[in-house]
Image: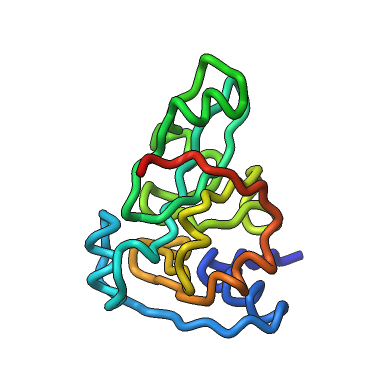
Amino acid sequence: MLVVIMPLFLTICSFLDEHAVQYRTVHHAPTFTSEESARARGEDVKIGGKAIVMKIDNVFKLFVLSASLKVDSKKIRERFRVKSIRFATKEELMELTGLVPGSVPPFGQPILPLELYIDHSILENEKIAFNAGSLTDSVILTTKDYLSIVQADRFLFSAQ
């Protein structure tokens, strides 16, 4: 039996199509920072959905916040009542998701095998843009549509 593995970008597009979500894709040169991604998309950096994988005690979780902000580790520690948190290493990220830093999309199940947490900063924008499984492909859609198709816990964890 032949098993065809679809690139994550196409998986995300199929997922959005299945949910009848309108979106725009942008193919661009590789981007390695939120600012580069925003320029390549022609969008403000604040609408970028920065997806960060962190290890909370012994469990990896996915946090999404505006690309114009930084994660506030103290708030995450307080939210989960833990002492041990850290960013996933490049190797752990590859093992968990098959992705390199900067290419992680803001989706948990069924796209990525991670629990998803969305910061309130995402709600402040009419749309969200993100690298969709690669450093060269972005997706832009309304925040309303994004929130309607993801299963996530929403809480404040970013720095202002």
